[in-house]
Length: 91
Image 1 (tube, one colour):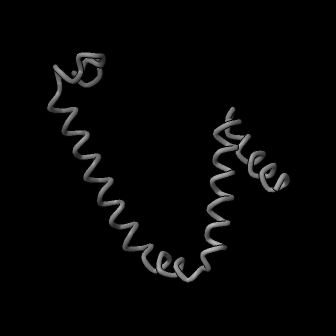
Image 2 (cartoon, helix red, strand yellow):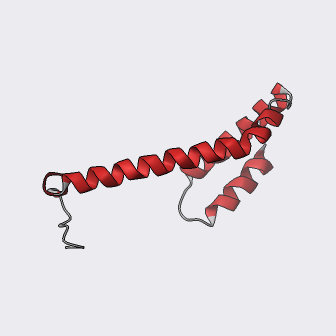
Image 3 (cartoon, helix red, strand yellow):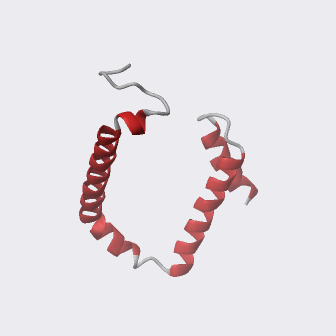
């Protein structure tokens, strides 16, 4: 029991109002954070459009390959650097 709330499968039925209030507050905070990120990054996003399409797609392809190798071989946080290096070595 934490602060009078019993955790477990009955949390949504016994303290549903509190759970939904926490979810609602988290969504509002996330939306505010996204709005601030968009306003701050809009200049960078516009400059990103001036990059030639073939370079942008190449960068995107490399990032997706790194992500797929990382997700395939994920064991611990030290493996991230190894996946990035191996991806660039084999290509």
